[in-house]
Length: 240
Image 1 (cartoon, rainbow, N blue to C red):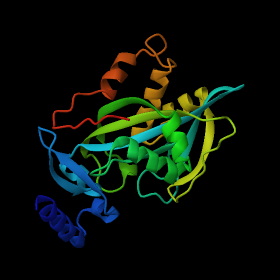
Image 2 (spheres, rainbow, N blue to C red):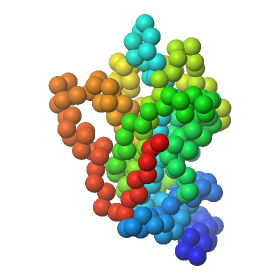
Image 3 (cartoon, rainbow, N blue to C red):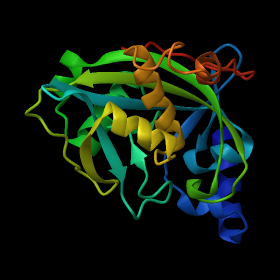
Image 4 (cartoon, one colour):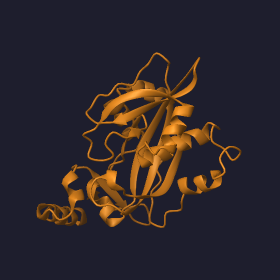
């Protein structure tokens, strides 16, 4: 009943065309959890930032090791995307809708966005960590800006054979390219990555010992931003 009342209210508000964020309605619901991990209600994804709802997502970083060293498969978002068009991205990512487990969502996104077969994901994927952070919506997020939103991101890594190339399957990704570590670091410094993809790439670099306290003066500050304590009810599910 709560979910239906909220949905009807949001749909009525959308018809008034006073909140631009609601124009990107997705018909995809996010869960809102209570203090005991119970689902209190579900909310349309595009409206979650209006209420500061904790949202959940999954992200996959694919990489190869060959004679050129460690390189990452970086996606470029399609120019027509409603949010963060033409920015760099992880290999595959998506929101964690109501009723889905993280690994289920990851398998689905890997297939839909990068044409990575389910059997390869199940066999080779490795969980990295759960990132907990706060995101402030900027101009490229689409819709209202300055909204403060807590997020939980389940992150994974997958080493691919050098002869396997991720391929865009839907209209969300323009292309995939192999980036060297130096190229990744340069793109991060130039803020060419979608914000919550940038922090996943940073986490990957930390996990692989590329970014550490010896070469990054702000290392411990970065760690604290990637793993913030969220003062709202949060449900952390198993990653695999």
